[in-house]
Length: 573
Image (cartoon, rainbow, N blue to C red; front, side):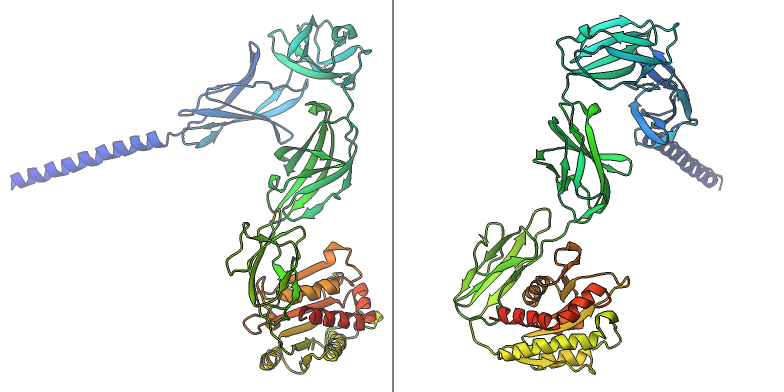
């Protein structure tokens, strides 16, 4: 019994020893992998030889210290050091200027701890007081004034040209005069440096001798607050004479996020799209600079909003593929300007190695044309397939004007209800089509969308067109728009042709924001849903609740109806 008891104690002892050893190992491992930073503080700033240094107490396990000098809540200087003595290299300020200083310590895992205090620091060295223009001519003496000068202090002034010292003198008062003879024969930037008794540079000022003056900039376009898709931004401006470099500085909030050199072409510069991020507001500051004299550059600024990268509009065709007369000339188009269209006629998928569309294609027999479009700063379009079949067929059209009898327009223009006026337009479309031998069916206003779609399918309509007018909550929107199901719908081409032709006679077609274009319902509209109808579109003929649009509709019912009918006739050849 005693032997078993002793054996049990031994086992327990071994287990406890293992647990204790593991605990010590684990604590040591964690300390090694995650060394804990201890608290530390900022002590002071002092001059050490030619350097200004910031001193902090030590934080255990710190591998670096990051210091930030802050003025009016903005970081004006930032540096790092792997020791508790942090050199403030090239930091200068104005006499009596006050800053707050923060320091953060990091360990090897980039874990961090902030100092327990902030240091308030006031710059006490004398500095140049800027009282004159940077520009001087060879007939001018150089004049400088010191702010905070004390006769008990010892300062030296130097002049440098291309980093070479050309003049040095002791400072004997707060007013400094340097004879023009010192810089005779020079041109360009002359840098004045003020050094204290420890030979530390405490202030600098640049003169520009016989330097061409850059002309002041004034912006012509775009307007401040300009909004665009993700795209190049072209700045049109006046001025900038004598500048041989132009830089675009891009700010998001107060942060400079990009600086690139741009090149002047006439009176404009182009900032490329890849300089921007999508869905971001920017302040653009354009600098016109002579040589590298940024200090005396001329600038202009504006705010722009950059949207998303859009997709190139798909390729549509000028004539109906499902039945077409032999010898018909077909055009390939995209609503996106400046596109390159690629196509194949052998059934293969088009690539940038495929045929480039340059001239219309003559259809003499059955052929499958696959297309897609490419444009700069946009995604490539979807691939659209058009199976052209040479055959005769009697054209059948189904018209579905609005039955919304409660939608009133601007009464002072004579616009009554959407139902009444859209049916009046449909009357003109129907008459014009029938006069050209087209079979036309109409919806019954008392019916519903399910009945209209069913009837359209029953009569095997080649094209189903719903005709509506639009309205907005603000009653200020204007323009035309037409819907198909998606970018690859069979109705895309006929809908685009109808839209383009009607847009050409719309009175606001010189205003880009009214150009609402071809839109995709993506299954949300029954009369354009590809699952319900083979070829359906819905056009919104302007806005009946906006005076100018409503007046245009009322004064042009016949013109609008004939324009739509002629678009259908030309598409179906």
